[in-house]
Structure formats: structure tokens, C-alpha cells
Length: 264
Image (cartoon, rainbow, N blue to C red; front, side):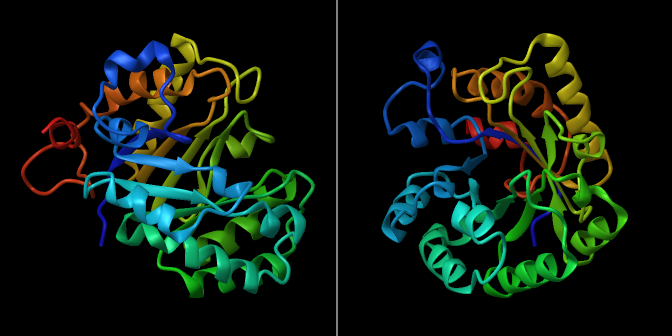
């Protein structure tokens, strides 16, 4: 059983040239990234499948404490719209389970046009939960998902609702659903995926993270503003502060902090 902790990372593990000195060779970009951060979100799985052997290779190239979140395919969320996804889920999970015990979270990002329908939502999440030991996080973007009924469905099935920035509705700015996992996705503002977060915004993000951690949740914070290469710098700035906060960590034994483990 993993304990609570507070972990920062990015969507993907690209290393822009301006950060190459902080992530020196040897090793692949993922190996170099994993020497600084304890988590990563694989988002390319949303667009295309990866072979199981690819996931196995990624898992073998990172430290034992490292964990992955993987985004579910758009075929399930955007094309099938959560309906009749059994075969798609089986194929996806056969691939992603190549990560073994380093697979921690499956991220289900929904299209803005998909409203909350209890029978469809409940059926989909029940189907997926029966097939995986990974925890589930859902990033809805239609306003109906932020009403009490949807919140209760997610919480009752131990599914975390992602806190998104920018938030499609005000309630989307804070984590919801299952309280055991607080998952943040910072997509960049004002231009989604492109904008850098300024110092004031990063201070706000640090406060969000620390507030969520103080509630007892395990916190995952993912910077997704990767299009212009800002995610890595933003993650470094937040991680430098968060890693100094004395929180218990699922990625570390009794002997030290997350920062000590990563630098050891």
C-alpha cells in the first residue's frame, strides 16, 4: 500500500536544450529525467498505441521508486465516448501493463462535449477498475461532471477528479472525487500547452499542492505546457520547494526524503 506524498513531474520527458546542463548524460532522456523527478505522465498513449515491449523498456530504464501515469486512448474517451470499450481496454492494458509495478495511475481525459450520464460513466469505470490495479483519475471538461451526483459517483468508485488549469468551470480548479489522490494538470495559461507560468502563478500552484498534501491526499502535479518547452522549468521551480516539505513518501523508505532518494 502506497502512503501519501507529494510528487511533481511533466507530461512526457522531453529535455529542451536550455535545460540540458541540469539533465546531463549519460542515458536516454527518460533516464536523465528520472534522476530529478519521481513521476511522469505518458500522454502519447492518447494518440497511438505503444508496444508492451516499449513500456517494459521504459520501466527498466528508471529507478525502482519511479512511477508512471498513462493517459487512456482517445478511442475510448473521444470516439467511443465511454461506450462498448471492453476490447479497447483489454488491448490498452495488455500494452501498458508492461510497466509492471511502476504503473500507478491511469488518466481518463474526457472531451468537453461529453456530458455526465450516470449509467455510462458508472459502467465504464466499473469495467476499467475490474481490469487494472492502477488507480484511476478522470479529467472531465463538461460542466455536468462537477455536480454533486457525478462527484459522488467518482468518490464512491475511488476515482480522483483532476484539478485542471485552466479550469473549464470554477469547480474544476480544485481536486474532487476520491480524496485519496489529488491529481493536478497544469496545461498553461493564457495559451493552453504553450504559456509559461510566471512567478506569481507558480507561487499559487505551490500553495495548491501543499494544501492538497496537508489534507492527507497523495498529490500528483503534472505540468503539461510542453509545446514551447516551459513544462520542465516550471516543474523544477515547484519541485525545488515541494521537495523541502516534510511529507511521507510512497517512493522512499524510512531512511530519507524524496529529494535525498533522488539525489542518492
